[in-house]
Length: 519
Image 1 (cartoon, rainbow, N blue to C red):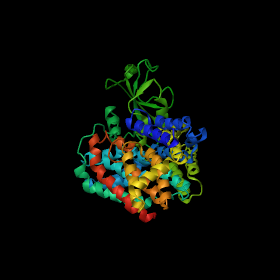
Image 2: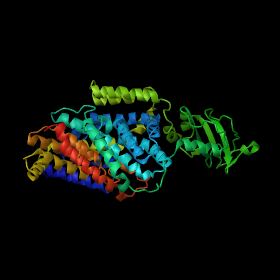
Image 3: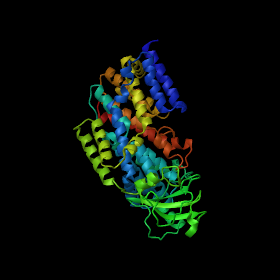
């Protein structure tokens, strides 16, 4: 079979698998690499080259940095500080939420920023008497716009920057994305503020994230502890556990104030059926509830085994405590990484690896935490799809598609070609991962720019903008999916606000981008 046809068949099968949602994204990406090798399109080194690509390494390292900021309460602190000063006015709160998540996204990625701020936004919205459904979709959509403020906002930025350099142009600067990101954020916030009330539902959420201050009050009330008792602090916390069936703790004599057998935790209270146990009744039985206090690390370690069932995971609760242990170190490492990326002293992958390593050495995150923080689905997706971009170039598939595109729109103006490229990216981006979409379209954009004899930079930047316009469905990005249940949304809610934003992004990509990065 002709190599071009083979490559297109593999692409079509990959898109069908992505859209089916029945095959894990990582398996689809690996299948693409294996298929390219099995059909002889690429040799083994080329087929597996994505797994050693500097872009992939940098993306993986950013997940560790994001985990450090989240786990130490930096994002929770930022959210509380900014939103807490915004008052209770709906429109002011909405604007503050949008600007905050955009700024945070620029440093720790779309998914990390949205995940960290969902609990804060829900609590603030509820206290202000605003339906969370009026706030959470704007949170996700503003994060998409904020991903264009800096190189670290999304893996797509890194991909197009490297693609531009590989095409003989230059990589984009760390803050260069902000030239288009700032107008996108401003326009997104204005559209949401003006149209949001009418286009967003006012619906009760099916799931409410935890309010840490309310959680502490509930624990004090449940266990009848003194009002001034500090349960959730920077270094120490508390968690409820239930004695598991067949636990070795059954029959043990415990009482409030004593140290647990491990020597790491203190028993704050013991209850059976909601009633305090005292005296001889404190011999534990299956189903008894303990309130344990101690250092966060000790709580996580001692409640991870089969002896007890944890009511509220201390690792999750800890993230909502503002500026926890290690926060200053995390901020310092982040600042150094940003300086390295902005100045270009070292390659991006080296800056990312150095930051991730420093966070582990400084004990901001543990090695296990660092490994678990990496979204391996994203890493494998990018690594597996990079060889497809290589195949598009080496087999001439990109030339064929680019030629067909140019014959359709004509070569009189590059604006039409740019518009067609953006529309293609936006359509695919609603159905499959925007990262996978950009990896597919990027080599085509490179060839189109070369055939027209114009700079590849506007095509790459417009591709980034188009990739960020994943607004029409809850499955377009993980951030869209994250707000689905907390906001009480339905599938058809997204396009109502998403369509005006998508059209705005299209106009920016086609008309504004070429003004900053001329053809």
